[in-house]
View (cartoon, rainbow, N blue to C red):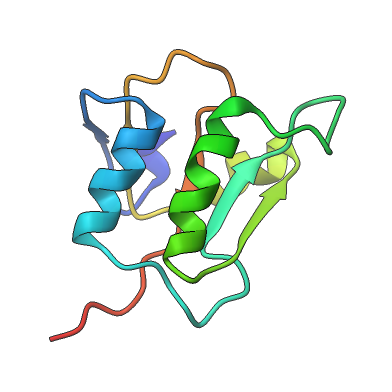
Length: 107
């Protein structure tokens, strides 16, 4: 899927999802001009369920003052195809993925 992104290849980080999101947030602010700057994938067959991976990053996203939403699996894949880049982390648990929308970097 990374070949469909603007960057064109996968970036890799040797950390789980929570640590990876923390690392990204130290470098890039999230977009405060959209309803949801973070999007996760719904659990197949139980859209209301919140996986542990998502529960762990939710406070990090909220601390940035932005919203978070969740979308159906194939809608998530489609959004990922339109991403700038894919960062592959070392998360072993299922539903350990999130789309982050970068905001304005203050200068």
